[in-house]
Each structure stands twice: as structure tokens, then as C-alpha cells.
Image (cartoon, rainbow, N blue to C red):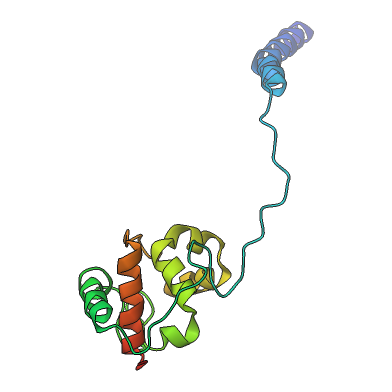
Length: 161
């Protein structure tokens, strides 16, 4: 009698194990699913130039400052930049602007303000700044002339002439 119960229990256990293990067919189907080819080519190296990443490779500065651009740049700063950047060295949300034209080239600044997302993804200096600030700068959709005016305002803020 006990042996009969043992065989019934063993049969039931085998049935349950076999029933639960039925996913092997699904696994084989999944294994046969063609996989997308993996692009193993190395990612293009980030250009670590002082000019950043973007279309500005040669920004001609004016001497003396173009006061019309300074005024336009201050207007853009007041509307789009001032809520996150102070004009001194203190960090607000983003870094303070004092000395930015000494730390960065005009081309880097222009590329950063007009190409924020790609700069934050690929430029080592922009990525280092992001680690300090912990907040991605939103794309302000500045046009080229607006970015140039902001640069001129930054130069004025840094005491350039």
C-alpha cells in the first residue's frame, strides 16, 4: 500500500515537473528569434578641442565691444539665462558667468549655448560641468545672432573691452 502511494506521488511529481518545464519550447523559440546585429564599432571619439562640438569654429570678436550686441545679450540673459546663472562666480543652478570668457573659448561658448544636448553628450568639458551642476541645461533655442550677443554680454561682464 505504501509503495502504491509512493508511485502515485512520484508520478504526480514527474507530471507537475514536466508540466512546469514546458517553457523549454518557448525558450527555443526565443533563442531562434533573429537578433539585431550589434554595432561593435567603437563610438566616435569625442572631440576634446577647445572649440567644443558644433558649427562654430572661428568666432571673430570685436574690439572694442559691440555695445548693441552687449545690450541684446543682456536682454537675452534677462529672459532666458538669469534664472539659472548669476553674473558673479557663484553657482545658482548653473555656474556663475564671471570669468567664463577666460575659461572657455568664444567658439566653445557659442557651440555650447546653441548645441547644448550634443555638447553635454560628447564634450568632456561640458560633461564635467554637468557633474558639478547636476542639472542639464535646457536648450534655449538661441539663434546664432542671439548666442553671439550673449557672448558679447559675457565679455562685457568679464571686463573685456
